[in-house]
Amino acid sequence: RAPSLRRKAALLAKVQDECGHGLYLYAAAETLGSSREELVDLMLAGKAKYSSIFNYPTLTWADIGVIGWLVDGAAIMNQIPLCRCSYGPYARAMIRVCKEESFHQRQGYEIMLTLSRGSEEQKAMAQDALNRWWWPVLMMFGPPDSASQHSDTSTRWKIKRFSNDELRQKFVDATVPQANYLGLTIPDPGMKLNEATGHWEYSAIDWTEFKQVLAGNGRCNRDRMAARRKAHEEGAWVREAAAAYAEKRRFRQTAEAAE
Image (cartoon, rainbow, N blue to C red; front, side, top):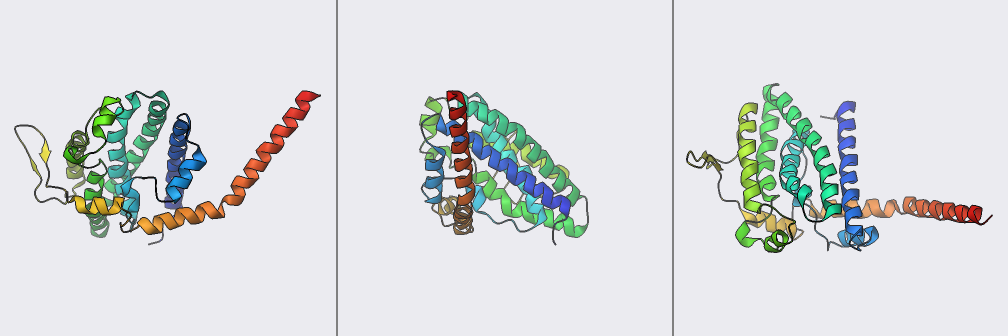
């Protein structure tokens, strides 16, 4: 079904907001000597990594709810500890990102609540979206601690304060009660509550899919990169016009200062 005008506006606002998050991080990276142009070129060349979750398709309106609820919820779980990391520009960027992500998470949960309380068709749509996104979201936290190559360094430099598995467990423990309230079923028949620890235990993750996505072989990897390259090429005139205007303005200010 075609989304309503209100839904289109919500999607546009979310895209704009995520673009802003990227700008925060590019600005933080610039303080370390990497230019924005260099980082964009690395991404377009396929050399820079980006979140694996962006390589999955969105098929229905319920996907927008799940992305807000689970994807942004996982991002918050990952990023809140980074607000207190050792590098100031990065920590300050994360503070702003987390405040905005919290709005996305609440909006997504509200969408899922509306669908789960709606018609049978709507509830089925919500359950289908949860089924498709659950495992990719758990993979967002990165590989298990035993296979994480950079965790020790990140912890030593005080960038990471919790391990991948610790954050993943916190996310699961927080999310299962939310799914229960929605009346939706987590797509993991092996999940059970450990009464002794108070943690929800989940089945082993199949990391083959995660590795394929990181290698560029996910369902949407090539489509996503092609869209990014196309947008970059078609937007060249905007960047050129902005640079020309900035140069013209600098020339005018220099001339006025010399008078």
